[in-house]
Length: 128
Figure 1: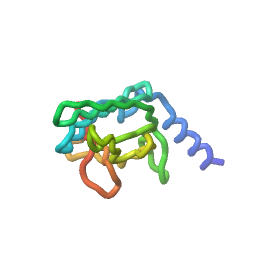
Figure 2: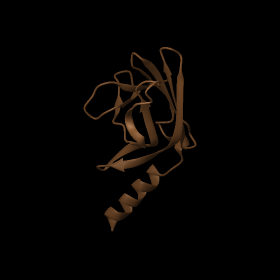
Figure 3: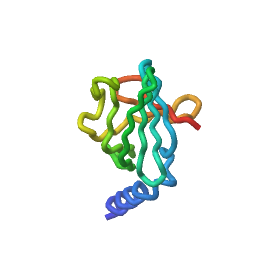
Figure 4: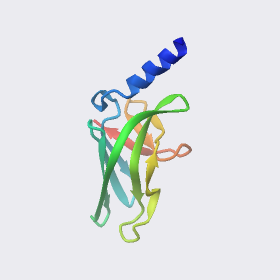
């Protein structure tokens, strides 16, 4: 009973308003051929823009929320796409607008980083 109550309280805290989330904000990814900007809005939606070196722009949007994965709070980004090039429309990640559960790191200066893959370094870095 006590475990169930604690679990219910934890889930309720995770379901609280996005406004109090430490994840809301602007994140940037520099990747040579493009600059991606991901904005997690307090209302649970996001805007993602990719600006390629030739200044062409691709944009998409979707929703985000806090969930638990393996007992840990995680960010869930729905309808996620990361584009390879503007010409091929090839997707690097998020085939057919999938769901992304980015590993979250805290950098030495306290900045949040959303890694593109669990194994790889680098990713979106929060801009304050």
